[in-house]
Amino acid sequence: MRTPYGLEIIENCLTCPHREERLFCDLPPAAVQSLATITSSAAYPKGATLFVEGQAARGVFILCSGRVKLSTSAADGGTLIARVSSAGEVLGLPATVTGKPYELTAEVIEPGQANFISRSEFLKFLREHGEAALRVAQQLAETYHSAIAELRTIGLTHSAEEKLARFLLEQSTKDGNGKDQIKLTLTFTHEEIGQMVGASRETISRTFAEFKRKKLIQVKGSSLTIASRAALEKIAEVS
Image 1: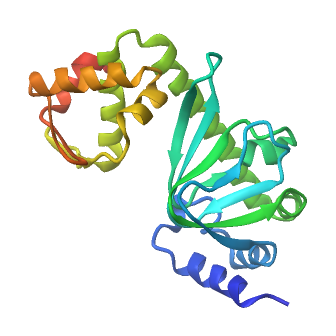
Image 2: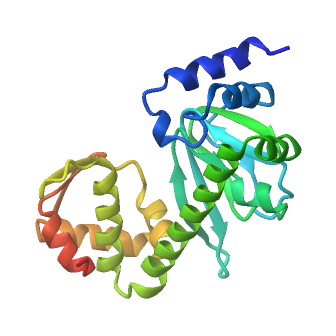
């Protein structure tokens, strides 16, 4: 018998205005109903850990609200942030499908809610619903391509200016409006940005100061204005 929360999942998925952007919300009603029966929900405070790098895969977490930082340990003992996930993303997908340990650590950085599905139930669900399995395959392919792009940014970008310019351009793609001058909200610390692009906090702070001196950006609190997207593209050598 389906729980009241299961009914809530069905209603939310069928009425969600972002259905097509999310992995499972735009599935046929029968698949959504099946998903609801195997899902459990919990609220997570800031600082909570969903899973840890190297831990045996228990299942997937579907992020309903809040944000989660996905990171890995670097060879020098530092931390590299792979990405920051937001509502609608499925976390722990590669490890759950392959049965290998989680390759990243997932830490909540903005309080929210996540739905959990155990590995055995999730694999059974994919076997029974071909469209969901196809979407998972597509998501895994996108994750692979994103990882290659990140590798290029960190490994093939030589200067801190290039790395920061690429990072800001990526953020402007998410938050911008397509104009040359873009305003966006930057909620990451300099240390976190350094962990994302492979640079020290001190280097990122110096580069921010240099960009401000050259009037490429303006910063006021968490509000950042890119004065010229074209100028940043030139620094990042984006064709």
